[in-house]
Length: 74
Image (cartoon, rainbow, N blue to C red; front, side, top):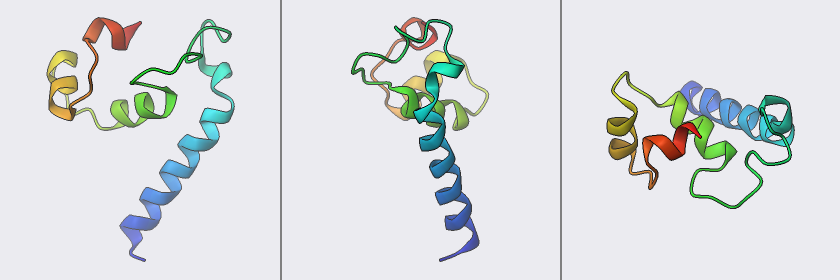
């Protein structure tokens, strides 16, 4: 396994671990990320890490996420 793959695996392991305590990162822990949505906690973190400095609308279009910028922010 290459070094890049090791870093990738470790990063996504950490994201999965964060998902277990996602209530610590939420304003409304009982409501935030409580429903099954196209952008759950893990997908949201991965999306943010992949941003390239464009507008939010363009970022979401580029990565093919079925969400509006407004829905993403909320």
